[in-house]
Image (tube, rainbow, N blue to C red):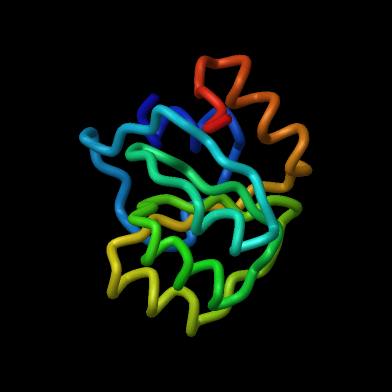
Amino acid sequence: MKIQKINELLNAEVVCGEITNDSEIAFAFASDLMSEVLTIKKDGIVLLTGLCTIQAIRTAEMSDIHCIIFVRGKKVSEEMIELAKENNIILLKCQYSMFKTSGILYSEGVQPVY
């Protein structure tokens, strides 16, 4: 699924990055525990999290994740935006809970990692 489609489905706000037509997502992983995210070894993943800290950006960088969706309307800091820009990570935020966000993506064909 294209990130643009995900953005539309979630009524999300693009906080950082440019959504291009080649941005394709096949899997989603929802977690607030960044140690769990570090165990994922798949391509084409979007990270759903409520952990709105610089550690989420660093974890995505190390895990080669190019899109993070912050749930529950979390506020993204300028420091996070700068680091995401440096690493070409798209940041979206939506107002939905992690459960609802996961359900919407799953019902539209995005697969779970496990």
